[in-house]
Image (cartoon, rainbow, N blue to C red; front, side, top):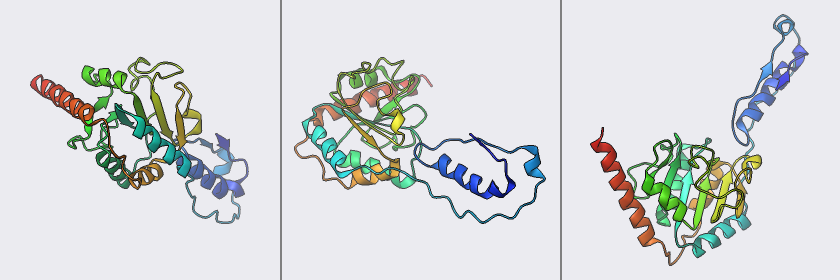
Length: 233
């Protein structure tokens, strides 16, 4: 929060407010405007356009993520949070499909991955499919991209151990303070969603994947759950 006390600083502080609101983990900011600032007249230089600042995943982090995926037998990807563009959604879907990775979405983020795609296996919101919850507990690797893994997504903090998740956790988030805040990740990557998704989509696919049957079973369980939900509607 900031307050404008000099009318000539209005362009500067508004520019700064937009910079903060759109950088890192995007969110609201508060800029207080005292009544006298509505009356004062001053000359002020034009501050120019704001430019969002987002972290990019490093080559070493991407290489380590791929190494961990190569070693996995029961991986699952969780996508969520904000900051997703249409291109980022396409890129993360491409990454999932070329690697045959099952994907679920966090609370109210089902639009990140087209629910009709073969890689989509459900959502972790209120009323998450019990079969999906079981499978996430059974997974040996969780790749969380953008999601905070908060109370609803973690099913009241029961999906993972605290602070040790009990499995390989790769957590990608634009805000550094979210990484390791509750669950200690094996690999933490600070990155914006468009930046990470583009980099992930450009990676060489994981060879000799060991999770084909795992992914198929997840998809079958997801289809059965969807059919039951439709029957009760």
